[in-house]
Image (cartoon, rainbow, N blue to C red):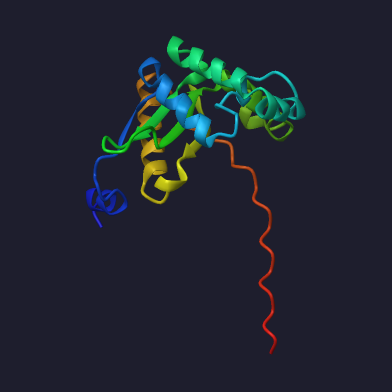
Amino acid sequence: MPQASRRRARDPEGGLRVEPAGPLTADALVDFFRHHARGCYCRWWHFEGDDLSWQGRCSVEPDVNEAEARAALRRGDSSARGVVAWYPEVPGIVGWLKVSPCAAVAKLYRRRLYRTLSCFEGERSGVWTIGCMLVDPAHRRRGVARALVGRAGELARARGAAAGEAPPPRPRAPRAPAPESGR
């Protein structure tokens, strides 16, 4: 199946738009986070406390994360770099992907899992990292994530990226075995 046909099959309206996040998308993106991100607002990478403190902040003080996200987006700060997806006929943003120079998500490389890996040593100035992705559940399985990743790669290359990387997602809990039938 040709690429264009595959896109139409996943995006029946053919109207999905993906653009860099920034000052013009700040309010819509913060609203998207408010409804879908459980208080995070994609600020975990920039929070200096431990994981337990972060969970507390998301639960008790999500407004701090919201204010930080809004301010970073309005400034065009590297901590808020990413791409947003929307359909012109649907109100609001339907997807977000954080992509930034690896220095903007330095917390990733201090995590126990990554800090001992030799592949993360040496010069990393041309490396861009996907920090997180979020797609509105009502718009999943329509090619939104694929479009976000594709546009993020274009954006990173246009801004000088020589390489890109993405940490693996959190492992899912093992599935429980199916109950045996009473044969």
